[in-house]
Image (tube, rainbow, N blue to C red; front, side, top):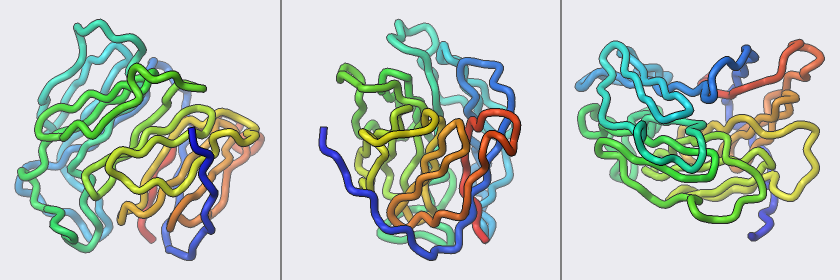
Length: 229
């Protein structure tokens, strides 16, 4: 496995929002899903509904979200740990490089399992996975790229890119706590990793805007999401 080089942090005005909550299920991920025909707001926030996923692969749709399949009932080799909706793979400010921002044109989502297996539903395209490969640590999350691909992140800081730009990882480096989440920038040229100790690692054009120590929050960090500012 290649050892990537950490890229310089840039001055892109993105802020990292982190949440520390009690994790009660095997998977605590959720993907929002806007109604067909809706337009994104200037900051990329979408009305509509959302999808939730459980560790055994049950996907539930709420609001205007549409259930397009689930791996429940399959003989999963590892629990589901993440879900992402491809309709968020739309750059803020409008389409570029042939990427459609019209809802209804992109109606699918991916789920990822701890062993790196990826499950695509709806019109989401399967770009590859780490399923069947020997991993140094379990996969803990997935983030969609506006190019149509996605990244998988492992608890040891390893990042696996599939039709998405690889900008570095923390694989092979000393961490104070395991990685628990991954989030991508709106242009697909960078991403963040977050550890359960609150450490944040930025790659590509993702800006480092600070970190929240566990001693400050009182609880371990369990996720990360980008915001426009």
